Image (cartoon, rainbow, N blue to C red; front, side):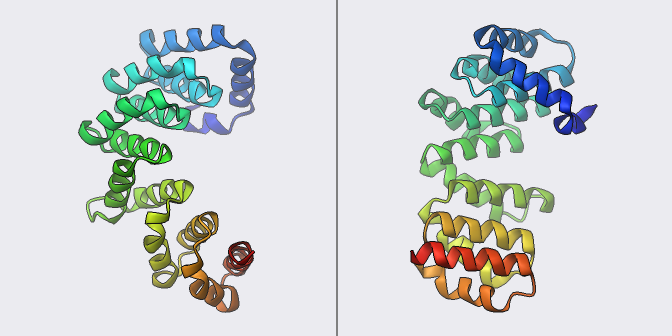
Length: 215
Protein backbone atom coordinates (compact mmCIF):
# COMPACT_ATOMS: atom_id res chain seq x y z
CA UNK A 1 0.00 0.00 0.00
CA UNK A 2 3.01 2.31 0.23
CA UNK A 3 2.69 5.55 2.18
CA UNK A 4 -1.07 5.43 1.71
CA UNK A 5 -1.00 2.64 4.27
CA UNK A 6 -0.78 5.24 7.03
CA UNK A 7 -4.37 6.22 6.22
CA UNK A 8 -5.58 2.64 6.18
CA UNK A 9 -7.81 1.22 8.94
CA UNK A 10 -5.46 -1.76 8.87
CA UNK A 11 -2.58 0.44 10.02
CA UNK A 12 -4.66 1.77 12.92
CA UNK A 13 -5.60 -1.80 13.87
CA UNK A 14 -1.96 -2.88 13.71
CA UNK A 15 -0.87 0.02 15.92
CA UNK A 16 -3.58 -0.79 18.46
CA UNK A 17 -2.40 -4.41 18.51
CA UNK A 18 1.18 -3.27 19.05
CA UNK A 19 0.16 -1.13 22.02
CA UNK A 20 -1.79 -4.01 23.55
CA UNK A 21 1.04 -6.44 22.94
CA UNK A 22 3.54 -4.52 25.04
CA UNK A 23 7.10 -5.79 25.17
CA UNK A 24 6.39 -8.78 22.94
CA UNK A 25 5.24 -6.45 20.17
CA UNK A 26 8.23 -4.15 20.61
CA UNK A 27 10.62 -7.10 20.40
CA UNK A 28 8.83 -8.47 17.34
CA UNK A 29 8.95 -5.16 15.46
CA UNK A 30 12.56 -4.58 16.48
CA UNK A 31 13.38 -7.95 14.94
CA UNK A 32 11.66 -6.96 11.68
CA UNK A 33 13.50 -3.64 11.69
CA UNK A 34 16.79 -5.48 12.10
CA UNK A 35 16.38 -8.48 9.80
CA UNK A 36 13.64 -7.99 7.19
CA UNK A 37 14.93 -7.88 3.59
CA UNK A 38 12.03 -5.56 2.71
CA UNK A 39 12.68 -1.83 3.15
CA UNK A 40 8.92 -1.28 3.24
CA UNK A 41 8.52 -3.71 6.14
CA UNK A 42 11.41 -2.08 8.00
CA UNK A 43 9.91 1.37 7.36
CA UNK A 44 6.54 0.36 8.79
CA UNK A 45 8.18 -1.42 11.72
CA UNK A 46 9.88 1.87 12.63
CA UNK A 47 6.61 3.76 12.17
CA UNK A 48 4.74 1.35 14.44
CA UNK A 49 7.49 1.57 17.03
CA UNK A 50 7.09 5.34 16.95
CA UNK A 51 3.35 5.02 17.39
CA UNK A 52 3.80 2.63 20.31
CA UNK A 53 5.79 5.33 22.15
CA UNK A 54 7.65 2.71 24.18
CA UNK A 55 11.14 3.64 25.36
CA UNK A 56 12.12 0.00 24.98
CA UNK A 57 12.19 0.54 21.23
CA UNK A 58 15.01 3.08 21.44
CA UNK A 59 18.04 0.77 20.98
CA UNK A 60 16.63 -0.87 17.85
CA UNK A 61 15.54 2.44 16.37
CA UNK A 62 18.95 4.00 16.98
CA UNK A 63 20.64 1.06 15.28
CA UNK A 64 18.37 1.47 12.25
CA UNK A 65 18.84 5.23 12.22
CA UNK A 66 22.59 4.80 12.03
CA UNK A 67 22.97 1.77 9.83
CA UNK A 68 19.97 0.78 7.71
CA UNK A 69 20.77 0.47 4.02
CA UNK A 70 17.70 2.52 2.99
CA UNK A 71 17.66 6.27 3.69
CA UNK A 72 13.86 6.36 3.96
CA UNK A 73 13.99 3.72 6.67
CA UNK A 74 16.69 5.72 8.44
CA UNK A 75 14.55 8.85 8.19
CA UNK A 76 11.57 7.03 9.68
CA UNK A 77 13.74 5.63 12.45
CA UNK A 78 15.22 9.05 13.21
CA UNK A 79 11.73 10.54 13.41
CA UNK A 80 10.69 7.75 15.76
CA UNK A 81 13.70 8.40 18.00
CA UNK A 82 12.85 12.11 17.98
CA UNK A 83 9.25 11.45 18.95
CA UNK A 84 10.20 9.13 21.81
CA UNK A 85 11.76 12.18 23.44
CA UNK A 86 13.60 10.32 26.19
CA UNK A 87 16.82 11.67 27.73
CA UNK A 88 18.68 8.60 26.44
CA UNK A 89 17.81 9.69 22.90
CA UNK A 90 19.70 12.98 23.19
CA UNK A 91 23.20 11.68 22.46
CA UNK A 92 22.32 9.65 19.33
CA UNK A 93 20.10 12.48 18.09
CA UNK A 94 22.93 15.00 18.48
CA UNK A 95 25.35 12.74 16.65
CA UNK A 96 22.90 12.26 13.77
CA UNK A 97 21.85 15.93 13.65
CA UNK A 98 25.42 17.14 13.32
CA UNK A 99 27.10 14.46 11.22
CA UNK A 100 24.70 12.17 9.35
CA UNK A 101 25.10 12.12 5.58
CA UNK A 102 21.36 12.31 4.91
CA UNK A 103 19.55 15.68 5.10
CA UNK A 104 16.30 14.12 6.31
CA UNK A 105 17.96 12.20 9.14
CA UNK A 106 19.77 15.37 10.23
CA UNK A 107 16.59 17.45 10.27
CA UNK A 108 14.49 14.80 12.04
CA UNK A 109 17.22 14.43 14.64
CA UNK A 110 17.48 18.19 15.08
CA UNK A 111 13.73 18.27 15.69
CA UNK A 112 14.15 15.65 18.40
CA UNK A 113 16.92 17.69 20.01
CA UNK A 114 14.80 20.83 19.85
CA UNK A 115 11.96 18.99 21.60
CA UNK A 116 14.46 18.19 24.34
CA UNK A 117 15.20 21.94 24.63
CA UNK A 118 18.60 21.58 23.01
CA UNK A 119 19.67 24.85 21.35
CA UNK A 120 21.82 23.03 18.79
CA UNK A 121 18.70 21.32 17.46
CA UNK A 122 16.89 24.63 17.19
CA UNK A 123 19.82 26.17 15.33
CA UNK A 124 19.95 23.33 12.82
CA UNK A 125 16.19 23.55 12.20
CA UNK A 126 16.31 27.32 11.71
CA UNK A 127 19.24 26.96 9.33
CA UNK A 128 17.38 24.28 7.38
CA UNK A 129 14.29 26.48 7.09
CA UNK A 130 16.23 29.56 5.98
CA UNK A 131 18.72 27.83 3.69
CA UNK A 132 18.17 28.41 -0.05
CA UNK A 133 19.35 24.84 -0.57
CA UNK A 134 16.35 23.39 1.26
CA UNK A 135 13.78 22.11 -1.26
CA UNK A 136 10.59 24.18 -1.18
CA UNK A 137 8.45 21.14 -0.37
CA UNK A 138 10.54 20.49 2.76
CA UNK A 139 10.49 24.02 4.18
CA UNK A 140 6.96 23.75 5.54
CA UNK A 141 7.58 20.50 7.47
CA UNK A 142 10.70 22.09 8.97
CA UNK A 143 8.66 25.12 9.97
CA UNK A 144 6.07 22.77 11.43
CA UNK A 145 8.75 21.23 13.61
CA UNK A 146 9.82 24.65 14.85
CA UNK A 147 6.19 25.58 15.48
CA UNK A 148 5.61 22.39 17.46
CA UNK A 149 8.60 23.12 19.70
CA UNK A 150 7.59 26.82 19.97
CA UNK A 151 10.83 27.90 21.62
CA UNK A 152 10.79 31.62 22.54
CA UNK A 153 14.05 32.14 20.66
CA UNK A 154 12.22 31.39 17.40
CA UNK A 155 9.52 34.04 17.96
CA UNK A 156 11.19 36.60 15.63
CA UNK A 157 11.03 34.10 12.77
CA UNK A 158 7.30 33.53 13.26
CA UNK A 159 6.59 37.24 13.69
CA UNK A 160 8.32 37.90 10.38
CA UNK A 161 6.19 35.30 8.63
CA UNK A 162 3.01 37.02 9.86
CA UNK A 163 3.89 40.12 7.87
CA UNK A 164 5.82 38.60 4.95
CA UNK A 165 3.38 36.07 3.49
CA UNK A 166 -0.28 35.45 2.75
CA UNK A 167 0.18 31.70 2.50
CA UNK A 168 -2.48 30.27 4.79
CA UNK A 169 -0.49 27.20 5.82
CA UNK A 170 2.58 29.21 6.83
CA UNK A 171 0.41 31.74 8.64
CA UNK A 172 -1.48 29.11 10.61
CA UNK A 173 1.75 27.40 11.69
CA UNK A 174 3.18 30.74 12.82
CA UNK A 175 0.02 31.83 14.62
CA UNK A 176 -0.10 28.53 16.48
CA UNK A 177 3.53 28.78 17.54
CA UNK A 178 3.20 32.36 18.78
CA UNK A 179 0.03 31.46 20.66
CA UNK A 180 1.75 28.49 22.28
CA UNK A 181 4.66 30.64 23.47
CA UNK A 182 2.29 33.50 24.44
CA UNK A 183 4.41 36.02 22.56
CA UNK A 184 3.04 39.45 23.43
CA UNK A 185 5.25 41.21 20.87
CA UNK A 186 3.27 39.55 18.10
CA UNK A 187 -0.06 41.01 19.24
CA UNK A 188 -0.12 43.95 16.76
CA UNK A 189 0.50 41.67 13.76
CA UNK A 190 -1.96 39.07 15.05
CA UNK A 191 -4.63 41.69 15.56
CA UNK A 192 -4.04 42.98 12.04
CA UNK A 193 -4.63 39.49 10.69
CA UNK A 194 -7.69 39.02 12.87
CA UNK A 195 -9.13 42.27 11.50
CA UNK A 196 -8.26 42.09 7.84
CA UNK A 197 -6.92 38.76 6.61
CA UNK A 198 -8.68 37.64 3.42
CA UNK A 199 -8.74 34.10 4.85
CA UNK A 200 -11.53 33.42 7.33
CA UNK A 201 -9.61 30.56 8.92
CA UNK A 202 -6.59 32.81 9.44
CA UNK A 203 -8.79 35.53 10.94
CA UNK A 204 -10.29 33.05 13.39
CA UNK A 205 -6.90 31.57 14.35
CA UNK A 206 -5.39 35.02 14.86
CA UNK A 207 -8.32 36.15 17.00
CA UNK A 208 -8.00 33.03 19.18
CA UNK A 209 -4.27 33.65 19.55
CA UNK A 210 -4.84 37.27 20.57
CA UNK A 211 -7.32 36.19 23.25
CA UNK A 212 -5.02 33.43 24.52
CA UNK A 213 -2.01 35.71 24.74
CA UNK A 214 -3.89 38.51 26.46
CA UNK A 215 -5.55 36.18 28.92
